[in-house]
Amino acid sequence: MPTSVNCPTCKKEVIWQASSEFRPFCSKRCQLIDLGEWSEENHTISTPLTPEQTLTPDTIEDIEALLAANQEGFFKE
Image 1 (spheres, helix red, strand yellow):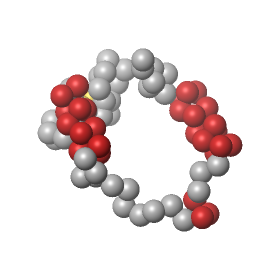
Image 2 (cartoon, rainbow, N blue to C red):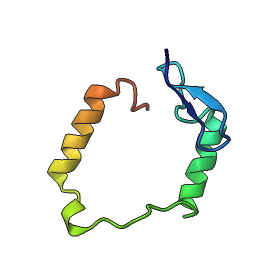
Image 3 (spheres, helix red, strand yellow):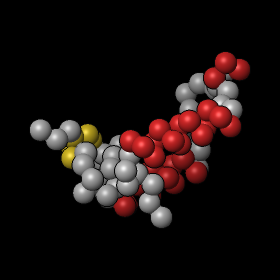
Image 4 (cartoon, rainbow, N blue to C red):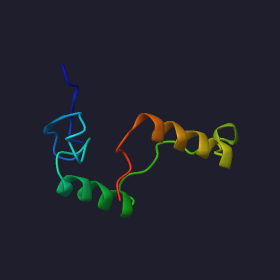
């Protein structure tokens, strides 16, 4: 049974699969609305990073490698 999530913008149900091109959003429109909200600083990270959580270049490379290995097709040009 495929996993489904609600679109963060309009709350429409989205099936989480490779053919859902804009997941977790239902459409490009909802994706762009969310991006606009971030760019206007209407969304923020709830708490700032503490010194123990600061990202180092090595940590970032590890995260990128993990994403690349586990999210085939996640990064699109």
